[in-house]
Image (cartoon, rainbow, N blue to C red; front, side, top):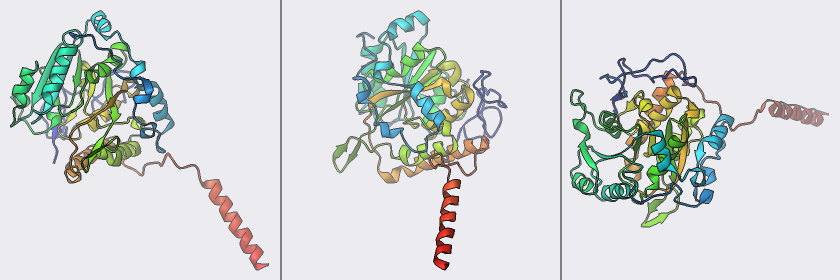
Length: 373
């Protein structure tokens, strides 16, 4: 069973800021061990943030134009979804003017095949003008991930050795939570280390909305998800757990989050002071948990999503996705229970049927009377 990192009480509950968008009734957590399910956290070459051409390159509109979306989710999507042509070309100037620092961290376990190219791309294109710190969080690799990352310009740390007074558990979320103890940036960007087609805009596009708007607290990636099947790469069809489990379940229980195209994407950036307030589920469910808890801490209007184009990575066989789906479902259901939302979810796609049903009954009665006479 997946464990996690929580505040001083068990079970863990979402924490809260004192901002106007937060829900009431919650108190902030500090770093502490708990028996709960989730831990709270205490360019050499100029690269444009517009790596591809406008809205033609974004994820298919059908990815968000689904029948269950509420009006609020549609409004959020229209205002808080950023595409290539929405982003500033002056990221370096904005960063210098604001005096902020940016850390990029990659959680990795046995990603020697891809981690070097990712680190080298960031180091060559974005450091030091945009990215101040590049760290690989090694979660116990048995291959040459650490050596390759160091050679490519990254600092490598053993994520399990961070915060040594707190016993470590396995999981990506555990590494992310522990990384907050060493990352020094005002803005923190986490990137998965298994991306095969990584480009510098994966980082620059994620931090662009944070640099452009001080009210923006967290930015999540979305993209097209190709999938390899029978030796052929299909342009879409990836993200199976996302489409079959995460999005429908989130939309049923947390319809405010219905506009997120890739709620489980492993690439996101946020402000350090906000991330330090959040609980972190330790394993596969960290992304879903963060979205729900951000809704509680900062409110929906402080969260955005940004288009990264297309993301290619190693696709898992279907039978390996069951543990991931189980952990994600448990996390979403746990939060729904804590929020008092475990009830029959309203089907937002269905129109009101009262008058239509009544009309059908009246019509049936008329036909019966006509038959009798």
